Length: 431
Image 1 (cartoon, rainbow, N blue to C red):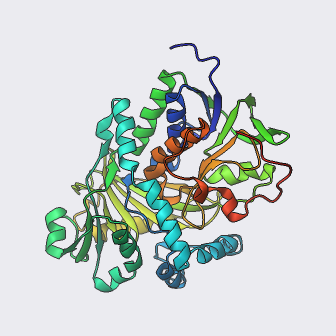
Image 2 (tube, rainbow, N blue to C red):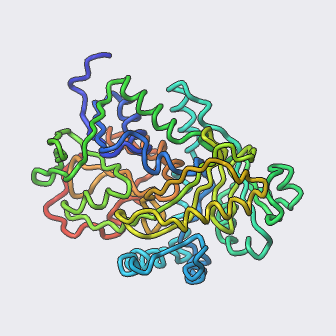
Image 3 (cartoon, rainbow, N blue to C red):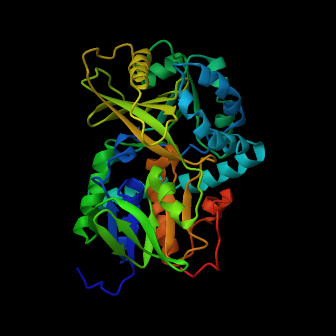
């Protein structure tokens, strides 16, 4: 490689799919890049997600109808949303912000901001994987959402209305048309919505590994260590402290997912980031042949055909970063998998997983420069859309770090929208 010793240097904290794409676009721009993570690249939610590239997900989680349904969901032990009693007090401030973000005016603004990020997502993934020689990882298969009946679908009417408002291609299906698309969907589901322009990743972990290998081959330095603090000199962040030493760079990018808010507390940031713990079951030799992701929308469960097998993923559980998995949530995936697909092989070998989705109460990520610290950048909090948005947010941030005009304005994604800094000492420094 050519000598780039004079090029700007960035440390990316986090080797999940968001951090990897951030590193990818910075390296494409000729920057020197170091990625620091205590785990192997691509583990966590980057490996355990549902694999869907959901560019039509312009509806925030906090729609008025969802907020009205939430108490009923919480009283249903088998429902898609769970907050353990011991965690109610800890979750309450986040939930209050979530409710405030569900007003019609807020929803309209959030939906527009999501649309701007989502629109080019599949194309970004395709271009990057083509560059790395693995274009078959990305497929435009469409996405099928199914409901038992019109009454069940009516609960999500606000989300479907927003999709239509933003010009999404949606086809309403009856039971026979559902079976034409996916013959093994069971008789419980009699109404569907098909979005032919949606995509999927056939193996999210392998995608992250392909990115990491490509970056390493292009000179990106991967460090296995745990970041414990951000280091600042005056109003500029200059490095990171890790368990095994310190690292310095011109620019520090926080892509640490659900752990990002904890890292930023030392600089005075108070970011309402909550982990929504998600689960999956991956079933080898399931007996189910799907062509695309199928969403059992009444239970918020995704079923995706992947290289390792059929993946059943979903549910939202609050509970923090330290608590172990809840066996009941895994059992629910098995139970509803059989409801969706009556032909599911009872002897299928199943592997289970639980991971931490980093969620902000308004369903938008935190993306862009710190306003009160030079050299500090953010790219985290993508919630349920981390895989979909990873390439776009990485490219947008890399452009901003180079001082190039952004394709879209980053103001809607700034942490200051939450009044997130407890102290704003001095004047912001130039990046």
